[in-house]
Length: 584
Image (cartoon, rainbow, N blue to C red):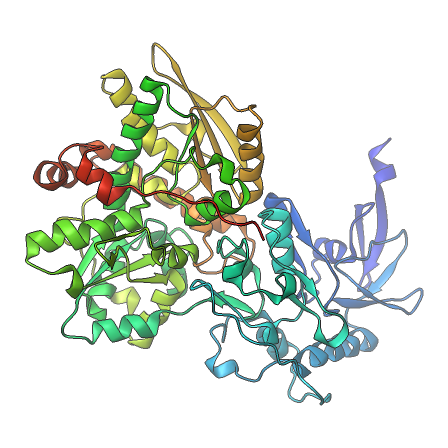
């Protein structure tokens, strides 16, 4: 078929435009440079997911030919179609739809966690809604805070179905779906079960795409302020790698701006006694994980070994593939390793009791809140991590304290658990964990120093990737997946005996931790994720040491406290186990 047969001509606000057959009115308008407001629409091109349920009716336009009002996000254009986006009929229909949504919405904007970042609020302002002409009953559903990670407030749900698309099509978790009918319809869990009684992984991607605060992280800022004001507590905070390349966005910086020193400075100003680097824990994780991989390969142990740094994917395998629980590495995540070392090694060195330490983590991830609450991630009755703040929560605390983030001087992390390598920096992006592991595992398996540390075949944004690493006598086969839908494909292959990988990295979120559910909202813009990833690779490139096992403070920790990689004490403090969970 000739290309011309695939094109049609239409007009948008009297602007002629040629588009491919099958294009929506919204796509035609975008090509013509005409803006049509949207709310429920979400197009995640590189995640291969589109939410165009046309539920909100905010994007309606007028078709001049028929005089009908049509939803632009889902209605395909036809040859010769004349579209008016700003006619009186279209504007009034759009306003009516928005007012109807607002008439059934709580009026707590000033105290809402999404205040000034709410798409419903922004549209109301843009469309000059000053009065709601529709009065009547409002939804009154119970609020769910059961999960310790995500708060679900159905009363703020506008039934856009974005979360349903993300949960079912991208993550394939299948926890959220439309419930009830008519006035009472909401996005929720089967039988309205609390999230902690479902197979939710707490990945937070539903939070990332929710246009209101129907889904949000459970706020820990009050608990952290309380700890900071408790003179009996020695407050320690750690910062994940992905935070330092995203936090600046909350203060007007471009995505990918590296603000490590300012983050440390801000945390000191907030009152934390000690500021450690989660990247130290990442280096420690690599040493333990590379040791475990080497032992599995040399002894004929279970392969492939899967990295276990991502708590959402750990929840996923526990619920969805419990028969494969011998596959993940037993290593704790860097967050938990830093917490365990802070309440043992650091406490011993500083003359502190673990009972007096409040360990706070700054994470790009909502699921880290749930991870911190796991009973197995504690030592002698003390949780490895006491509180977890997302990147967004830290930004709110900095603003609350009236700290001018942009003018802060750069400060270094505190010693003992505050030095890291380039390998640790790339933990925050998809492919980074397995690349860092490979740098160390190569030298453990071959006994030779690695020359080139950049494994560029492991990098990229594709959902599933694979590469081979030449070890001389054998080849290391590596698989990588980000997003849980892609993880499902890899896990099904392992279960069905189709996988021949030696090691696999899985991250639950698009792009890895840089796209975590607790990061500044990127609104589906994958270019933001790319810029954050590029920044992490710049940090790696500029570091004087780029292999985790060469971190001098990690070496010191083994010599002074842990013994050797895989030792009894290292295993007790730095490793964990997983348990099968019911699939609901």
